[in-house]
Image 1 (tube, rainbow, N blue to C red):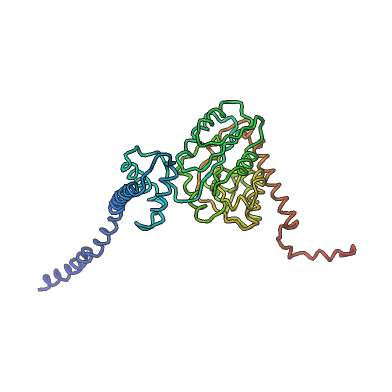
Image 2: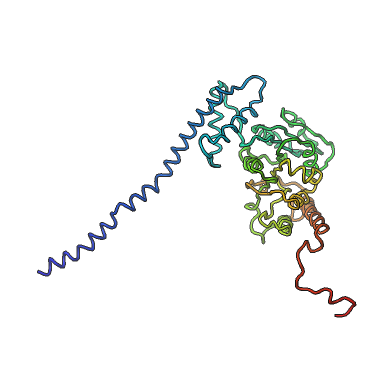
Length: 370
């Protein structure tokens, strides 16, 4: 009689355990956890189709006519749609495919090929300053990337060039060429270009480092949102502090003593960076000849500074006799620029840069006695 009882007692925990494992709650959770990937993909396709139809509708209501600049006109229509929130908020990850769908829908309805444009989320005018010195191998790609944007102006400052850079730059219909036969330097070239610019926001580039158009969007976005200075976040490309060169260390030091440690080693010496019209007016174009001084002035006057994106210009920078070696003319120039900025700060804030000396009573030595 005991055997059946023992058998039943023995089986019950197994049955209960089995029922616990088979409870539908975990199963439902697993299914819910597996759905977002499919749903997100479906939503993305549906969203692009919807925006494609909206682009076609805008083409019907606001057709492109002869004599209009397609870059600026279509971008203005995109901004009208983008700010209307007709489909809600467009995330950063959705922005490029959705804006492309709008462009394709508009172009197809107009019966024209889809232009190779990148639509930007701003109504403000955009300008660019490019400094060039013997960059015939790369300047065309730099200019082609900018021509995909609705640019108001592209100012190319060519200095000390002995190659074909001038001729290549002249092939860009939007470019204004400023040619100095003798070398004036990249920073002076940026200062000259900034003085000539009239756009609401100005992007600074070098002619030797092509950057994809899409990578410039974060800089445009933050300036449109009210920031004044958008720096390139080079932190991922310079390694740990102990392994950095003197240039990176002095950049970080100058930011830190100004109370901006979050900026790390990011500086207006690196491209790309972008300035608002307000920043250019407050800093002054002449200050751009020494970028760390310009950045120090931006901090002093309370301008809003951020580093919205990371673009690798460290490994992309071509080696030359001027920038190769542990110490070289370019690194010495940059270190000197930061020391010049420190000298300015010491003159303005005192020899301790407003860091209080709370552990010494220096007056105890007055009269020559301790």
